[in-house]
Length: 397
Image 1 (tube, helix red, strand yellow):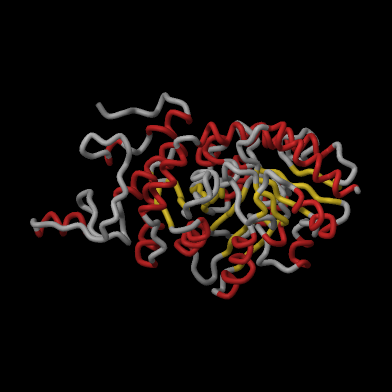
Image 2 (cartoon, rainbow, N blue to C red):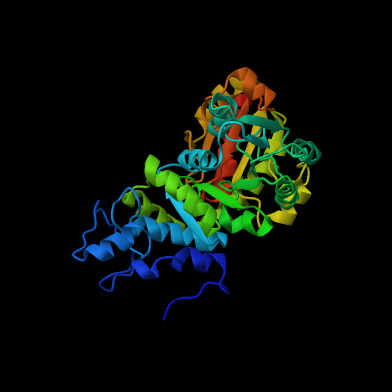
């Protein structure tokens, strides 16, 4: 009997969804299918599969059974009609934008997108003759004003990387559609556990699967979900341009996603505890976490999110000099340019999310030099707080 997922919760979907059709020989886990090509004795059947009249696989750059199982799982978690995957999160972002944009088109977005995304908006799209309007993040009136001119895509990221700012998806989706724009939302930080942009009016939702979906910092990938018609167009661009997900990565991402809800819930417990602790430290200038009542758009986050996630950031009064002293003293932390893993990870924005940007560009985005991004892991909360205590003690001394 085929499993139905309409009435079950996200954790059950994360474990079971998308896998049944790919289990073979009684296996309980999806196999890693590494074959590049798929053969057909019947020439008509081969043609029908090649022209998408019949389901099947012909070549690994196009589709792969293990990869398709991953796509199906994310599709179900996001409540989408279809999904297609990519070699990396940035491939998902860039391929989606390039699919729908041409010279003369216009994009509206926010200033606080991930550094790589920001580079597409400030460097690559203008070079292609595409107009980009970047609005202050959280200035909903300003975004609505920018949408009064013709616009092809409204691109949002919420919460943002690294300052976890929040944008009202439902309100902006309505404004974007009034302007005739496709509304695209990067949902990497929230994950499908805490936020489903398609249900809030977005047309497409994408993830860097490398992060929370995989959760173990051992596989690269990206994915975009939406209507069958839109995803088919993105898939066509991707299959020709070749940013294909590797089946081994798909297997690792599938395995990681089975514990997605469990991981996210512990990560956000840790994030809230750390955020509250950081607020008590006199060495800390600002704490950024949408779960705090002091966050500018805390109320919006409460309305559109089921939880506030495992990401936060803070800035030290001593700037980068203080960061250089404190971060090396942390024991239960990776100092690395990654996030969403089971291990807690710390990193300054200037060497992680916005390493591609100049100090002046980061300052214009409201990212101070001493800002540190924290991706909370699944460790015991008390141990992470104690680790911060001893690192702050060293900094104060």
